[in-house]
Amino acid sequence: MNIDKYPSRLLENAVNEFAKLPGIGRKSALRLVLHLLRQNVEEVNAFGNSLIELRSEIKHCKVCHNISDTDTCQICSNSSRNASVVCVVENIRDVMSVENTQQFNGLYHVLGGIISPMDGIGPADLEIDSLVKRVDKGEIIEIIMALSTTMEGDTTNFYIYRKLKDKEVKLTTLARGVSIGDELEYTDEITLGRSLTNRVPYESSLGK
Amino acid sequence: MNIDKYPSRLLENAVNEFAKLPGIGRKSALRLVLHLLRQNVEEVNAFGNSLIELRSEIKHCKVCHNISDTDTCQICSNSSRNASVVCVVENIRDVMSVENTQQFNGLYHVLGGIISPMDGIGPADLEIDSLVKRVDKGEIIEIIMALSTTMEGDTTNFYIYRKLKDKEVKLTTLARGVSIGDELEYTDEITLGRSLTNRVPYESSLGK
Image (cartoon, rainbow over all chains, first blue to last red; front, top):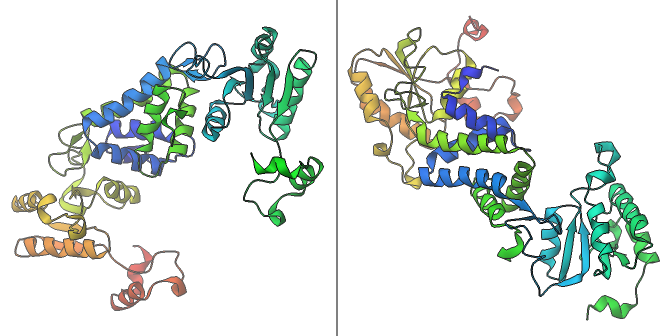
């Protein structure tokens, strides 16, 4: 690969930086950079500065470890939310997914990952001790485990269960079953089997 | 769509900026931003600054209009290149494509687009007058038209041909024919027909 093929060092730098992002190859990177070259200076400055500010100024909420502009995030500092229910999630995106359902009015606890020996992530790398400390304060009535339904998620669930099972807190997990809109013939056997075992009274499926 | 769902204004800004890029939706933008959040501050600063510098410092070569770090680009100022042959291309990417073949040792002329009435691009929006001026200096022996083989490319070719046909310069275009590695049954009729009409002596197909 001839490195001289870029007509400009500035262009090459920008392409190199874009190509470091996951899922963006050198051809796409060049396309994005040439797009930016056609925008006006102010817009490109705004883009560049938004990234620099993001990384240098963003904070993690000291209560739930969600990312935040302030020491305590908007959710934790919102007094209209129910502080006695805490939803445990893997990452920031999962907070946003649960928030988007508009079905949850409690607080969160962001673990920062899940236990995954294959990736070298153990319990000590996650915010599990701080979860136990939050529970120890005695204000939390229910912990909702909302982790991925994968082996790693199940492992993490079980680890947290063992840490919390002797404490005065109710542990629940998300319901698992057939997705809404799914046809039975395309549902995998494990999901279908579990949704049979955990079948619910018809009335409760009506919502309310 | 609930705008509050982003836990941070800084995060939201960065997502908005990424989502302005072509082919990047809000989900991908968030994924990229969360990736950057996991990088260290220096790397993200380097990314942001590379974009800011790119846009504010990059120049266009005053001879060929290719992008450049200097007033005259590396190619135009390279005295070992043949200044009497000029390859006319649509944009910067096409310069890079031709350079990558390592088969061309002349100079370029970047039009900055092709004539496309549908997109409101006429001859006056392109660097055609400056091409005519370059030819008028009398140092150019051959102009190679290397535009896309589309209707717009053909229109632009013809426009430039009319501008230059009475001048002391040879006008050529890229050979059109069956792509190397293509099977005949999958070649479109127009290409195949034209490559029959413009057939060449067998010896010349051997390279040299």
